[in-house]
Length: 297
Image 1 (cartoon, rainbow, N blue to C red):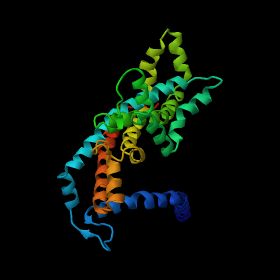
Image 2: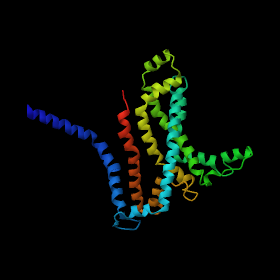
Image 3: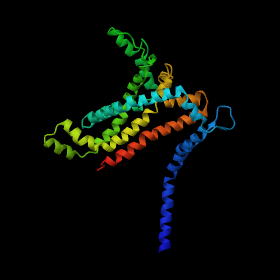
Image 4: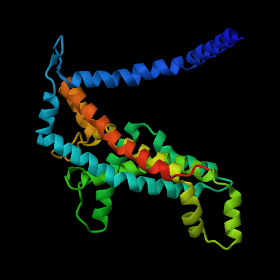
């Protein structure tokens, strides 16, 4: 009996590994291997034309830490995250509250809010280039019509990142709306109805019932929003290319420049490792500290 039981367990274990094998192979090939490859290359000097990477230890990291451009890019990236994450979450929650109801055309409205998330990057960049274009753009033309000077916002080092942030929030809000809407629809309608019978206003229901019960959703959305804010690159390539004077250069675009423009794979790998470390610093403490305070039932 024991041998049969052991054989059955072994067979079930083998079947389980076979079922997860495709996903496991995919993760190893496209996630685990690139991470360790990046760590390896970050310790080497490796440029286009070199047959074999040359080991240099921590030189790539030390060169970055002594680079003024690197610190400017890091400040830009952190600043961009701070001015996009909270507004995009507030907008996403607001949209979710607006569409969390039954109605004849509610499906169309939800699709309209979500549509910017599925638009091609080139299309989004073209729309916002038309809005931000110097003098002939929609924004500058509007300012001229009301008697103000055109801003030429993409050429202003103080305004270019806030302008990109507006574009990012417009695109990201619909994506975050889906998560908040899922969380709102997971709240029992009986609780909301009982609160209304007791005379609670919509604001009190939101503050005392919905927001506390959305705590797991907020934890997930915050991590997703921070991670996504570090991944803006396509729009920068099309709209500004880091101009003016690297005022719009973010970390992922800087990695792209080092890897695909300068072909300096060692430095781009070091930057990639630093970005992964930064994302871990942002994400992990939130899970450790906040997950203890969240009730999932």
